[in-house]
Image 1: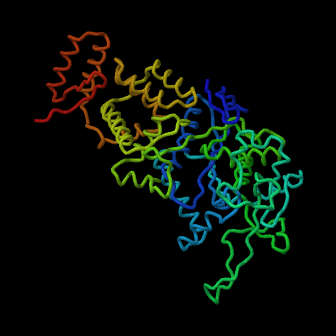
Image 2 (image 1 turned 45 degrees about the vertical axis):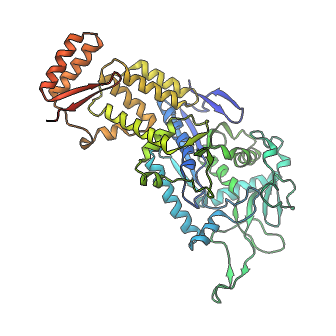
Length: 478
């Protein structure tokens, strides 16, 4: 039984998919205007872990991630520049070039962390018509109105607006200018009209400046004949999620920062359009701090995967660190903590470097591992079950068989690393046979036979290193 904490109901619930064994999952992807930092990437650890755990339980997830490559404005109040357009100005590129560059960078990090490949990677710019169609649907039902800068959703007409958040968190004026044309401060843009073309002094040959990304729409900017514009940030997720996964999803994931605005608005526009519940289970990943402080440009602590690799760490060291904390627990990154994760992963690899998998595993520990994941993806407890198994007095073949099953969820690449001969010593078959016999003797508490076998192994030029927790084979050096 898989239990998940549902942000919508604020409680842990038994997970019951709509159409088992199928499970539909949508994850809010990146806005591709800059590099992703380690805090951003943590949210995808949660969706990856969820997909892997569902597969472990015999379910068949269909997993969709979006790429926000247009429409995400710098202000939560739908004012200011589009983040892609702003980066394009800063970097001397087009918005299309910026989107392509940072999408590639994100996917490189995503794959380096061994995250599950989505069934569909949906780009907002590839789904403009779907977004227009969804807005038109809302317009037909009377949920929209037009003001000078765009088409807005009227939140006062959706009675359950804010049911997943507290309304006092959704307000203007705190850090952005107020749009006085909006009927309600919480109303949000579905479609934004392109700004009026402005006279520029950059070049006589280029007298007008316009957006790189804009499309024709059914709506006209008041006081003009212009129908050009671009979608708001929130509408893309609803349009793409429903296109690929249906009008009601099993699970929607994202960062905890999405709860009060982005996901609240997704719920409103989706349910207003369909009259159906949009998502049954909402999962949100907590923030990552660095040195106890929020990640910010001013502090310069938005470390990228590349920064970690330059410091001598691997992407899988970070993955292990992610696993060491529960996804709903605020996580504090430190170099010391990453070093501990690196050492734990090295110890794990060294422990099993000469092992081979048998035909059966350690069912007791597999059950404990699965139970931990079933309790709202409790990875710290799952890791503890794994280490308890490695310390247990059972054969290495059983341990390895079960460890590979566990690694199908943990994603630490143990099978791949063990498959590379250069990463482990080639131990003769005779030594392996004696080691197996020794393990069996020890499991029967026949320590006399165990000692005899240990001596035979030494005569063949190998020693058994046993620290009371793990057993490894090492070649004797002269």
